[in-house]
Every structure is written in C-alpha cells, then in structure tokens.
Image 1 (spheres, rainbow, N blue to C red):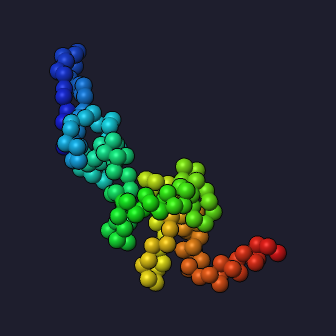
Image 2: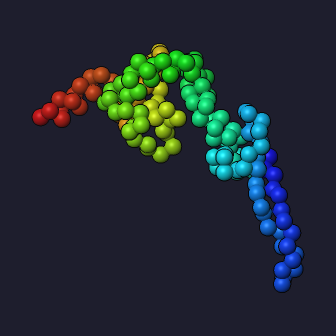
Image 3: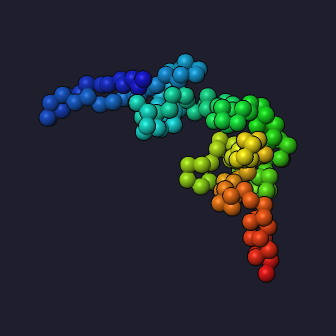
Amino acid sequence: MVQRLFRKEVGPSGPKREALQETRKCSQCRSTKPVAKFHKNKARRGGYQAYCKACIKENGAKRWRATERYGLTGEQILQKLEDQDHRCAICGVHKDDAPNVGQTRSRIGLVVDHNHDTGEFRGLLCVTCNRFLGFMGDCPERIRKAAEYLLK
C-alpha cells in the first residue's frame, strides 16, 4: 500500500496539499521504502510492484515462472547458465548482450527452451534463437533446409 505524506500550504487560491514523499512496504523484506525503490506496474493496485528492486535483484532466477512451468529450481537454472558460460546455447551471444525483444527478456538475459513434445528442459537461449526455433516448429529438417538455402 502506498502511503502519502502531505504538507498543507495556504496559497492565493486557498489550501493546497503538496505530496512530500511516497513510500511503500516491500512484501518480501517488509521494510518501508520510497516508491523510487520499486518498479512501476500499472496492472497492480497502487501502480508499483509488490517487491522492491533490491529483493527482485536478490532473488533473480529463483522467482522465475520456469520453476512452476518446467519443474526447475532457481539453482538448476543458474547452474545451466554457468554450464553455458552465460551464453545462448545456439548463437553464443552473452546474456548481457542478448537482444531485448518486447517484454520477453528475462531477468538473466536468456530464456528457457524446452521440448514441446516431452516438456523437457533443453537449455537457455536468447530471445531471437528461441523464437527462431518456435517459428520453425522445432523441426530439425526445416532448420536444415533453411541452412542449406542460406548457403546457396
């Protein structure tokens, strides 16, 4: 909940209320901080995220949807990130240089790739490579033909 502290001031047009500071309580660390320490989120009541920026950063991959969707733990994702040297498993772009396409960029710069038939986790990809696989229907033969076409 956002708390507003006001200072009353009397001007030529009558009393005015001027906001001095807005604060919000973080749902994770339970400390009250200025709203500048929270990401904006128009979809939430109050217009800000429930967790402060510090808690979001601290939790990183632990709060991923991937943990629910693919049965992975934050530690498994971070281990895979280490195994891949913080790079996309296909093109090798570093997570810090990975393209940010719309709202799809994850907190670690790469996204979880999985087999659509088995649901098995395959690796971490940049958004471009992940979308490429999706557009090609995860079909190795189609990808092979595309590569042959490019080599003409």
